[in-house]
Image (cartoon, rainbow, N blue to C red; front, side, top):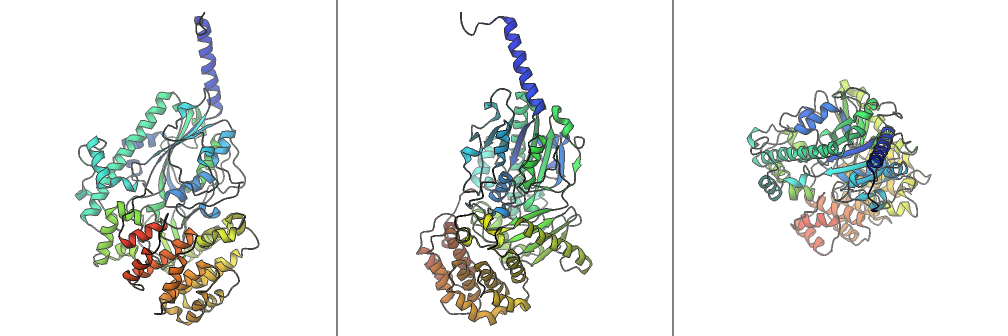
Length: 626
């Protein structure tokens, strides 16, 4: 007799047992499905966007909870995704710089370890982009590939599955990709919004190119919405919809210039919709279709999923569950950070409440609109906007993006959703600003924010340990560093004596901020010229680079340029990027000539991210996906 020949009662009984086993398992543990889109702020119909055509997400929103104040913590994919996977602010671990590769303590495990231990099948389709050197993708997920799918799990096994949809990514509205999509029928016959009908944000100048790319972007969002719809239909067809809690969110804001990479809402505020399957509807804190107002952020997402699944979150992480049995007290604000974006260095920190948004620029001498080589290579709107600015055709709001930043920014987000009216100097809000300023500094201290340490110093300071361990040790004078960084970035010349003293400090990070403060003061730092010259011989190259860039604004001799050129011989890629940035900014500021910088760059065979800077200066295209 064939081993597959059973009597009908036996077949029926086995089906019943298998079905019962699956249901019983699911009733105990919900599945988690994360549907993630890329580079889109809440440009959805269900979030009130008048251009968007997003029928699938609009319908999904009526079935779930919509979070009005959800944030990605960082405005670029790798820093945001590193925050998600570790349940820590990336800035706490030293992994906030885009496409970096930093070792973190083994005690900070990826959230999938905890789901796996609870019996979950964990899959990822397919983007990772973690800045953690000691995280191995094949160890994090049961499967992370184009074949990764919850359907491959064992019978009755709960799943945690991520599907990443790249359709709305900034690289997806180039002429070639957009034309191919239109030809393939992924867009409606007529554009979602014609270029001449686009209502531009007030920070963008009105140019044909900018209108065209906004129009393409809305078509891509339409196509992204269709893909979300397909994933939801697939879940329904699997029979698991009632057992699954679905999160939809974007990996950060975007995608046009002043979106992605930008600390403001246009770069960090994301749509978040959570739908509870019928068998777990009791876990929802409100009825379907309800708006949730509390601020939440990526650092909270995984621990919230754990709480919904009855998994105890690790005690050492910074994430705070906002749903489920372990739900914590609601946040009254979220902490946001911006480090190196592509190859361009910047240090920005911010706190966002429901009502106000406070920004502290620790690199106010750098504009928000630096030359992000990838963005400029795939987005024509970047160059179009810069051309308008260079031609003097931008109004004050539009020009702000390309100018040195104020040290502080304060916005009333209810009255100013685009965050274009800086109230930092409004005496009527002095109390609000001071409260938020102290809150931000407290967040930096509490999390031991590593962002004040130059990336080029990471390895030397960490030694055989991790940067996280180092900043938590007595060897790092955190409060002293925070104090001098605060003074250095204030643009207040009365702090110059403190900056000069800092450049003679025993600790290299304090010496670095002394030199940075002189760079920020520009010509007002003239009395520090002698000390800056001495720092060109500092034992730490990052300090030499900062001193050289500052001195180049004060002195016409060749020493700063020679120091920066010599720094490019380092074997430390972060140091090379720091030096290349300083050379490129010197060219931008008119301190160095184009011929001199091109001659230097031609002498070096750059690799990795530093090659982007060299390519930009030498006029070579760069097209690696971000």
